[in-house]
Image (tube, rainbow, N blue to C red; front, side, top):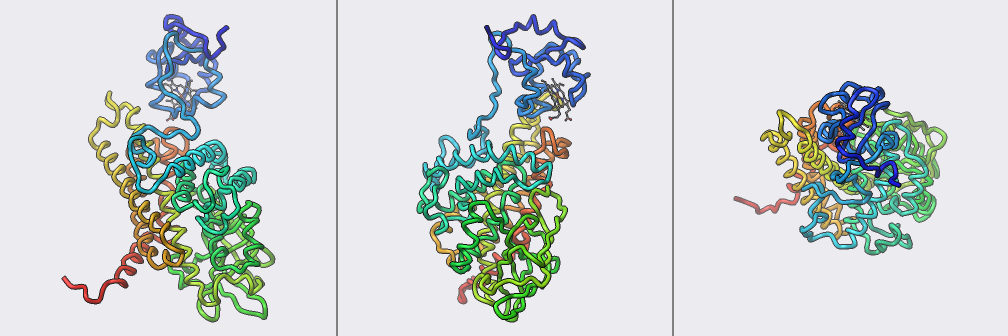
Length: 517
Ligand code: HEM
């Protein structure tokens, strides 16, 4: 006997159920009994009674108004009573880990028939595993947390730790030694910055900028100074627990007094025997509301010093309401005469500026990785939407103005991707200190270029989606989220214009003295 879902109906049968109380519709060969659902339909009952919909093939009308995922929700899935005899579904639901076949929806290294100078088959295998992980484990949670504003669950954090994703997000290095990375797909000594870039790119596809940050981004930027400048004891005390997802770390640099102008920081650390006494405030601290440690930039008698401050007496954190979800845990942090052992100093006393600046490179590069991926998703969304949306009797993409926007969006993301890959390749060839010397300028310029491109793409995508890009649910929900949050990329880790200027100033410093026209 055919099961409910595979029961076959003829068109003749379907068309008989075309009125209030006895209403069937067909979407992509699937027959739905919406007799009782009609009154509960969020779009209203009347649209379903329309002559062109009731008892008819409503595929085009449906996909002009809903995302495919609506049909996959259990409460709607059970409305399906069978299929049309002799027809098969054309619009397949995406499978976890699947690559998109939409042109430009994937970078060339993942597109069939194209080649890459940078990525190997190992990167491809790694990418597949990461996509499955983020789509099946992180995305469902991301949707909930984006909405509730609650911290990402410990269960998800534990799964990230188990796969060693928390450790891999800090890049290649000693901290990966002896770890099994993504069930052994990549060996610790073979893990490179392209593998790391894949993690950031796949994470960005959860399509919530706040979740990208809420998923322990504080550690990605707060842990490297401990790895690179902390004592062995401090390393043992903090790193194993942080990489196991048991302790959380935030980077506490910016203040209401100074953001990109790091030299204007006012939090002070005064030496008292074997302790620092830290007083001051920090603002916009990602993951600060739930962090156990703060990698903190302080003013000391001689210059700046970076100190690791554990949460304890005198440390207070308050949630800051931002344009994105509070899942990111953005905090205002107060240090009130906090006593911290001198051994918690990261790097040399007074040499904090180079600790902060070298750390910024990796952070800015990470922002670039997530932004390029988010932009690519916006391109995919716009290509799909402009194909399925019918306006003036034709697909939206038959309008030249829409195609012109698509051309700009595609060109921007490809330009961003290619420059990003070149910089990533340079990182693979350089030591941490070489990167600090040679790449601070290029990464500053890259971030300026990418965050600007991202905002332009968010703007274009909003125009393509129209009103749907203004609502947090429905067809344009990813574009709404990206439009609302793409500006964060232009600010966090250094304001766009300041970074562009940094790139030029670094270049000017390296101008040959004898350069003449
Ligand atoms: C099984 C069939 C259907 C289900 C389960 C369904 C479900 C939904 C849901 C959940 C929404 C809320 C918005 C969203 O989450 O995307 C919605 C909105 C809507 N639906 Fe349906 N729907 C169905 C069929 C149809 C059909 C055939 C039409 C045809 C005209 C239609 C017209 C609308 C409209 C106009 C809206 C409001 C869209 C907006 O606010 O942008 N629906 N529907």
